[in-house]
Image 1 (cartoon, helix red, strand yellow):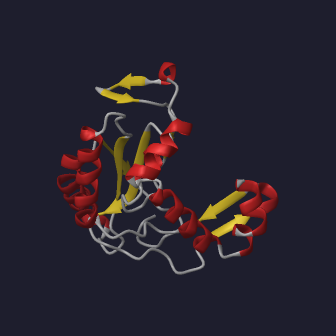
Image 2 (image 1 turned 90 degrees about the vertical axis):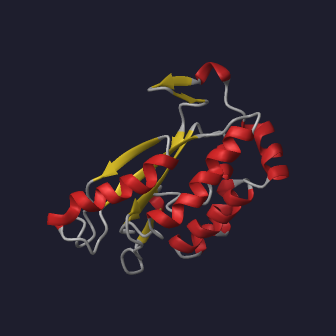
Image 3 (image 1 turned 30 degrees about the horizontal axis):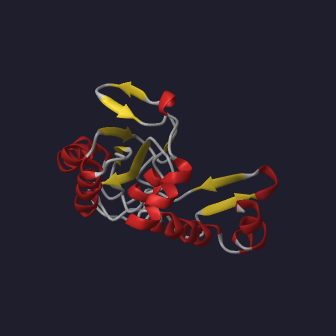
Length: 193
């Protein structure tokens, strides 16, 4: 089904718009009834579960940072069977990222070039969504994914003040994350290299 949708629909539109459209579909999978149905088909194989650092990953397969930048699709991604979702990269301050176009497809190579530039609504904006995702996971019989948060330097912050910027993101996000990952650069973004 994906090949059909990609070939005749998604590949004909702007890469960032296609990503946004697919993202909406994944967010819909977070709805209670739809999520229950999705989990029937995507339930992780119990023998693949991994426990490490005090965390239990229902599946060793997860989504890396860069896909769910603002923690808006954690439930949908969990309902697809991912054992962890790493949201972000989140910065202490909101930022729009690089100018468009910033996402490019290499269709013959089945690859994508990402020059997004840490576009996100900021650490504070993500806190309520991360809190809700963890509460849903605690109430759910089927559990949910481990939630990681990837933090990066805010573009407008001078390099000499980067440590303080990272500390602010840590202060805000550590209480609502299962783990933090630090992203130290965005090589294609001025102010983040």
